[in-house]
Image (cartoon, rainbow, N blue to C red; front, side, top):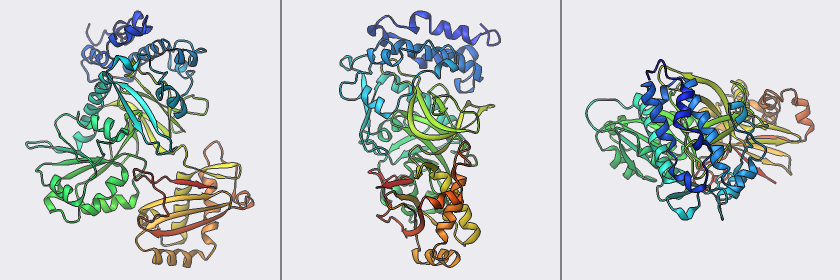
Length: 508
């Protein structure tokens, strides 16, 4: 068959035949061909890297795989009950009728007795990955078949190297380096799954450094050749301090910083680029359940790009239906490489804006933009306000009436909602608390920050809730709003056990 005459749906049906769509027994599942091998067959048939295949060709294989996922899951009694009212997903519209799973469902299915496994653990060949529960506080586990986990490392590593790092790490002779400050000894996702991806990026040398000191960074950066480094946002931000004593050649060799968790503040970016003149800063978005959800390919665009063929990434409304382009919804992920341990339509707790697909040249892939954690919500009376949009609105209004730009001066920000006291305070960690406090109070007066919040908050309501509140109705809630500057690394700003700073903290 030549590429011009190959029908993708016919090929998908040949590669995943009817007998494999619904395996006859649990024993048959480990013998199913891997989904990665089916992707390779598509590449051979169309003589094109899978990531660059037209969307309609990718969709033909993905839809066939989704049917197989449902058929395989039904071998398990717990999944059979969850899917009782669902038919075969012949289309993406059908697929959207599959019930969503949340973290509680994940915990019920894959912890303790692990009743969600299609193939039992006693067969062997699995890996358990754990999260400390940095959002909800309760630990969480998930199980993967090692053969499929290693497939995903190769798929994601090749995409990352080709379309993200490839454009920023210069070619030519000599070694290239990819380092991570994530701790490999930890049982949570960043140390195991992301490290697995980074080790499979072609053409680079991998260093699993773990948390680094200034001396360790100096040693790593003394190696000749361009370097990329991945860590959580706090681990990337601190590199501006750790790099102060580096030689010029070492600082110039740092080309790419990949931060994984939420947002890296504008102030932090400026500090990093002041130390490392050739640095490009990009987002690497991942979770315990998905080693690579989205990669920022260009510094000039905040859009994240899904790795084609790795997961089905959906942005959905509260009914589990896909939102339109430009609309915000909840991030839902389904791992496509999961014969033995399926987890269908998992809500990860993140809000995303759906963006138009990338359509070549180069990768053809889904894109979305981070809009905050699902829990990043300010609850005021009966209304819920996006904390990320509230911060943006408050920052914008402050710039009009004061000499202060929160993006420029704040290392970290956090809303603290004292519900019983009806008080919300925006804490901003800065270098010069006294000067910034004086500058804002001189411009606003003692109660000016409250009025800034009251007028800015209505703009933080979603498209579908605009008109729900205005300045007058917010005043009637009895809430008082405050802006307070605190020293850098202040203990008043709460951090998780791995150093993340949640945007919102509710107290009482």
